[in-house]
Every structure is written in C-alpha cells, then in structure tokens.
Amino acid sequence: MIGHGFAKLVGLKTVSVASMGVSIFAVVGVIVWEVWKTKKGTKELQVINSKTSENFTHLQTELDNLTIEQKNTSTQILDLQQKLSQLQYATATIPESPVTTFNKMAQPTKDSSKLTMLKRVIDDNIQLRKVL
Amino acid sequence: MSNTYYVGIDLGTSRSCITTSTGKRLSTRTCVGYPKDVVAKKRFGKDYLLGDEALSNRLALDMIWPLADGVICEDERSLQATGLILKHLITEALPERQEDDQLYVAIGVPAQASINNKKAIIDVTKDFINKILIVSEAFSVSYAIDRFDECLIVDIGAGTTDLCRMHGAIPEEEDQSTLKIAGNFLDNEITKTILEKYPDVQLTPQIIRRIKEKYGYVSDTSDPVKVTLTKLGIPAEYDITGILKDCCLRLTNPISKAIQELVGTFDPDFQEKLRHNIIIAGGGSRLRGIDIAIEKSLEAYGGGDAICVQDAEFCGSMGALKMCIEMPEEFWEKI
Image (cartoon, rainbow over all chains, first blue to last red; front, side, top):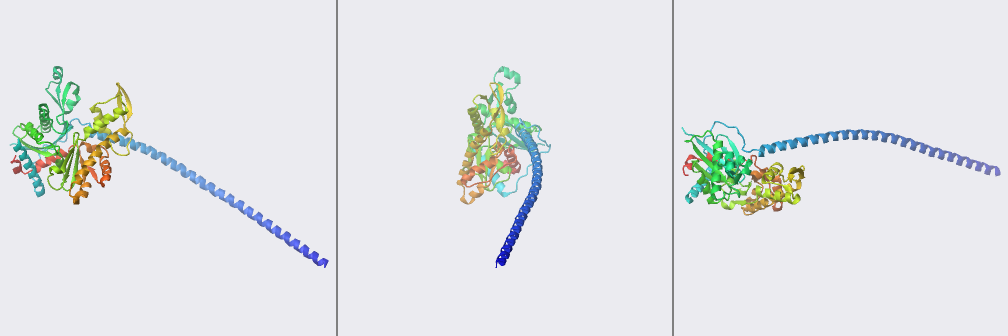
C-alpha cells in the first residue's frame, strides 16, 4: 500500500517536472522567436528608413531645382512685363508704324443691318449740322 | 487724279489716336503747350508744341488739355488746341496727302458729348477735312470688333468711362451712360493715398501716370510693387502694393454699379445675356486683372463675364476707320 502511494507520488512529481520543463522550453522558444522577429523588423525598418532618406534627398534636390527655376521664371516674367509696358506706354508718338503706299479703297458694306446703322449715323450727323 | 483717304480718330482726354486707310497708326497726348514767355518762344522757335513734345517741355509752357473733363472745354484756347491736335495727327499720319485729295474722317467722341461739343469739332476741322462724321466712341469700339448683338461696351478712358449697351441697332440715349470716374480719378486716388501713407514724397501727375501704367493692377495676387520716389530730392524705395490695389478697386466698384444699372433697365429676357457679354475697352482695360475685378464686383448683382479688347489703344480709331470705309458713297454725299 505504502509502495503503491510512493510510486504514485514519484509518478506525479515526474509528470509535473516534465511539464514544467516543457513550459520553460516553450517560454524560451517564444522569447527567442520574439527577439528574432524584432531583429528582423528592425532590419526592415532600417531598409525602409534608408530608402525614405534617399527619397527625401532626391525630393530636396528637385525642390531646390524648382525653386531656382521659379526664380528664373519670375525674373523672365518681370522682364517681359517691363518690356510689354514699355511697348504699350512708353510710346510718345508711336514711331513709324508700318506704312503701306497702298491706300485702301472704300468697301461699302452690303450687310443690311450695318447699312441701317450707318444710315442712322449719317442721319444723326445731318441733324447735328442742322442745329449748327 | 485725286485720292480719297479714310481716317478714324479717337479723340481722348489723355491720348488721341488715328488710324488711316494707308495702314498708318499714330497716337499722341491730347495736349498743346504755348510758350510762357519770349525766352521760351525763342528757345522753341514755334508758337506752340504738341502732344508728347509739349509734355516733355512743360516747364516752359502753358499747357492746355482741351478735353480735360472728357469733353472739349468750350473756351477759345481749348477749341483752337483741339483743332491743332487733329490737324497735327492727320498731317503726321498722311504725309503723302496732296491738296486736292479728299479726306473722309470719323471721329469718336464720348457717348454723352453735348451737341455744342460735336458742333465745335466740326467747326475746328472744316478747313482741313472734307467730310466728317461724329460717332460715339463706344459704338466705334463695337464696330471695330463687329459686336452689335446683346453686349455691353465699357470704354474706360482718362476723363470718362463710357458705357453703351448694344442690341443690334444704333444705341439710343438710354442705352448709354457716362461716369466721371476713369483714369484721372484713379490718378488722384493714387496720389492722395500715397501722400497719406508717405506724406513727404514728391509726386507729379506724370510720376503717378507712369506708376499706374507700369504697375496698375487689380488682381488679388501680384509681386510687391516698389517704386523709387524722392523726398526732398533724396530717392528711396516705397512699397505701394496695397495702395495700388485699393485704388484700382475704387475705380472698378462704381463701374460695376453702372453696368448693373444698364443691365437692370434692359429687357428682362436679355439681361442675363448682356451681363455675360461685357467688353472692356479704352486705356483702363490695360489695368491687369480689371476684367476679373469687374466680374467679382458683379457677383453681388448675379454675376457676369467680362473680357478686354485686344488693341485697347487703337480699337476706337480702328472702328471709326472701318465705318468710313464701309460707308456707301451716297451716304457720304448727304453730309
């Protein structure tokens, strides 16, 4: 009876030691796996980070180029605006516009609506002279 | 054999332009300068100087701007000056003209010029023009661009802004209105506002005109406008970006109101069409962004679309010339 109880106790202890061992092994496994995963993640992040840095440097260069280009364009626009205003306003008496020796002949309109309007212009001018 | 020359003239407050059937185009300031004293007379060797030449020598001259208020001032000197300017323009533009050549001219005048004013022009030109037509400036613009359908011409000059609604026929009196708010008003506003901000700077009408013509704008975005002005003879740079924009808006707001008044009294079926066909001409149309500013002001009245004519300076004189060329000879014979 005592022998049977002792065997049961030994058996139970053996089982509990074995299950503790398995648990410890499993916990260690999980920790190792987590560490490995974190390391892998860090490596991936480092790769992404370096790619982002590259992209950023590239964008920075492009932005610098665009800024230079914008400055050049602004200067050109200002230059063109000045030239335009010189053309439009600096004219004292507009010098020699292209002269043709050709004197355009009368081209009486045949458009009836225009004729009506022109007739009215003439009538108004006749009226004006009558008041003179 | 004698030739017939056709000429279109836009007689403006500040500048007058001529376009001829020979293809020549000229413009000059509408001013005459008479020597102040014998010293000046001896220096110039002439009784008077015209246009830009007079303006450049104005310190030694008594300047006459015969159309100072948009219409011919009715004093003797102004009438004489108007005649001199018109004769000068024609002589310069048609040097090949012989004595027996015929000259048919159409002159654009402000929409609401008085009968006395129109008579005065006929009077001062009778010695050197064979046939003369007096036409409304705004109508000349619409003739130049062939727009006789429902549209509204806004001719922003120096002395007046002429508005004229077109509806396929010669505009009647009620189709036209004239505002005294135009380029000269803008000049005064700019001067007043600059002096409020920078009280001691030295300004002349010429300086203001140069600033306006070079930088004038009414848009929301623009490069900073910095001009060199003098203070007791010492030049310095002044920022007038905000001043220019505010003053330009003081010009466009009353114009938009006048546009709305003409739209509001038009046939309701065509009001929408009129509001969306606004054509801006005259020197004022060269203010950058004026079309957009007018559209913006019109938002309060239901919106609108405005465009500027391409050749603001010569559009009126080109329309007047076109009228001359297309006028049948039997019509000319009536006057």
